[in-house]
Image (cartoon, rainbow, N blue to C red; front, top):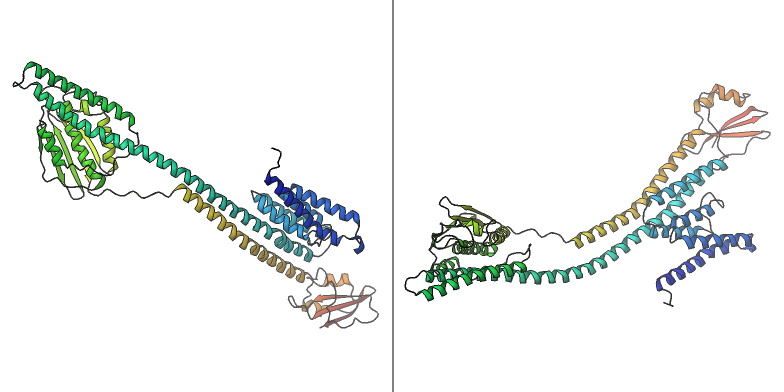
Length: 523
């Protein structure tokens, strides 16, 4: 608790070093020995100290204050004292500012402010063009670099966060898979043991009514049958608690074939007939579902329609296999359900609570097939399933972490592209604007050759303006460097362009007492 956190300490040291670095140009260019003053030095250092202090929370404020300190010195914005500060605070604004809209508004405001100051002071537009160039290179370009570095750091942080999240998710998935595997084992125990207990009940029921046994043996067989039925119910309740609602079916079929399953049921006393031999072998989930449909149909017949004849039919087709288990009405009446069969095995039954067909329907659906059940006309029950020979493999979905990492990479690439083309676009726009202004300025000082030919010695400037329709708005600022000396005794000489694009030759008009005294075309 007594030690200061490392991160704030590093930030304070960084800010101190930044202030010392940015203060060096102020000390050099404001030295009193070079014509400066200590007051200017102190003011500059205080301004930079305040900018560094608020740059972490309000980085655009630091940049705006630095621009405001540079414009009074020169409208071209590039000053020896604050040029380094412009670059530094421009970079920090891009590095620390979350959104870009405020920065774009600030850049536009700087350009407009420079244009207004140029108009107010009456300076040429060349200084404003220089301001735009300095703004693009010394402020906007570092700002774009800062934006790119910010996005790159975000990509790196996202990668580490995703890696940590994936490790936690893998551990959670492993735990979930272990629980699901236990649930699958419990489900298979219920299916196989329930089927065996149903067959034991059938054998005990046959012994219960056998005339070869005495009353004591028949009563014992009846108790065995009831105990097997109660054990089946308790097994269903216990395993039902362990089942997951979304638990997937096992991925490998049991070793027992459908023929062996039917033979075992027949040896236990169930009147079952297999209408198709040999039964086609289906791979994977379809094979497991085929075995489970036949097993569930025989179990339901043994539990809810004892003594009824059962027919198992497997009809192979080109793309799928149709399996149907049909049981007639029970000869001894229902036990735990209705004699029709669906009362005990169906969703509305009281014997199993409908869980058998619900789980079977889910298993068939996972294999890519469909399951239906119905009551037959004679009061029996039919269970039908259509299973594909080859279940379609689901397309794996891209993990969320991969999508997030790809999105972060796209953002970094966009930032790098902006850092390249935005300065180029600004330079192209600035060059186009400068070319347009230069053409406009040249047009304002262009004197057409036909108008020059009409000029007569002795005319006043007002007469020249009236006699010429397109008299130039203003002459050139100064004579061309290679122009010959002006005639002696002239009060004023004005120069006009003789061609729109070329700088020479020019027309020279000299006045004495407000009247034209000499005109010439000079190289």
